[in-house]
Image (cartoon, rainbow, N blue to C red; front, side, top):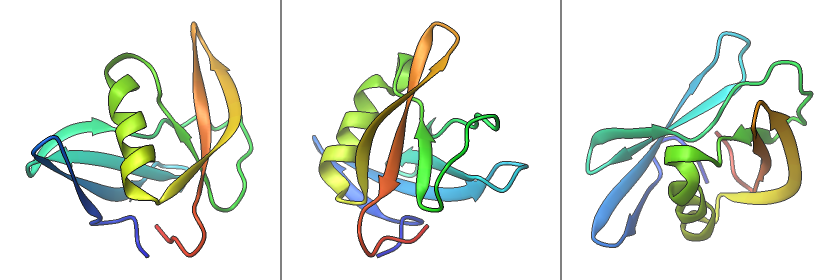
Length: 102
């Protein structure tokens, strides 16, 4: 299963995940809602080492609700329960579910 282009429904809206990369080649995942830009799910914290199938997720501010929706409605990711301090917030480390590719 691929992340890029994955669509799912939630409360009458169609969401889509689109992948690109940060300048350090880490995966960046954008969320579209009904075809329009909605938010960026990921955040890039270069100083934190990641495993091959891990991403850092922005789970605060405008992303607070959409992170839960993506995690609970796509079956693409698993929360590792690892938190990374970043200023006054903490980002979450997620890993790809089994058989998932970016």
